[in-house]
Image 1 (cartoon, rainbow, N blue to C red):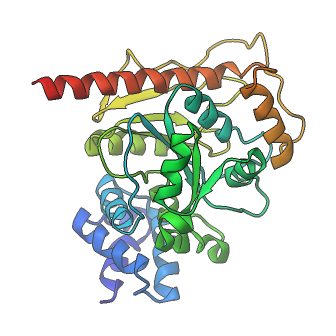
Image 2 (image 1 turned 90 degrees about the vertical axis):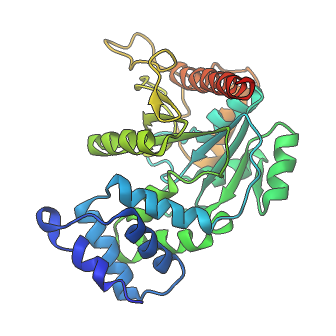
Image 3 (image 1 turned 90 degrees about the horizontal axis):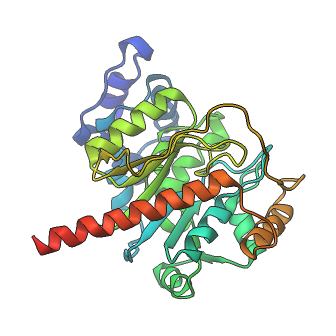
Length: 316
């Protein structure tokens, strides 16, 4: 079945385009992920959605299709999911540091993203330098968690069809809805805490609306160069949602005013230098940047509230 009927709706330009219903978006993404669309149709979809922007209903349909084609990973709470899809360009990529600090708090952490990205330093590369697991299946994920270590899973291992859609960027030169879906992807089940980052203000509003309507548990923040980690120099706003409801008591406001102290960061942002810095922080040789510690504390507090909520539900 052709996706032309859907392209007619979403491809009318920013002002004339109409959003799809969730069921239509699910069918469209299923066809894309299952390889039923031509390269021309896939490119048309990528550009049309880039111009129009996704609606909440479309994201729900897209995400459902990706989840149905993902490798099942047993949920072992407490669990945090860090989607790492941008990598570092100017600042060190500290996603692995957040993952290790959470693991020290007894949290199971799953990081997912691409293995390599030309011109950027990926979290997968840093994991390899740190000697951490890049899992090839769910069994290796469980083994890493048993060792109280965070684990990385490549997108093409976890959801190969989605990885192929992400690769369209290398041809058309632009990100597409697959990248938005990837940042929302997580194992199915209760006890999952997503970390969802945004860069542009319009995506902050879309993300908040999506998390609310999908009734997710999540930490939403402005990421650092697109990574799900607080800027180590200035703390961004950290918004906690439990079952889709914003929780001001668990959230943390952004740092306001003049910075009186800057963290000591590695001068180079290559994988080896970043890994050495992360190891020195984890071992206690160097202090962790305050904004990252705030992010970790925010997540640990949210997981505790999540467990309390689950306990109340069971007793009821």
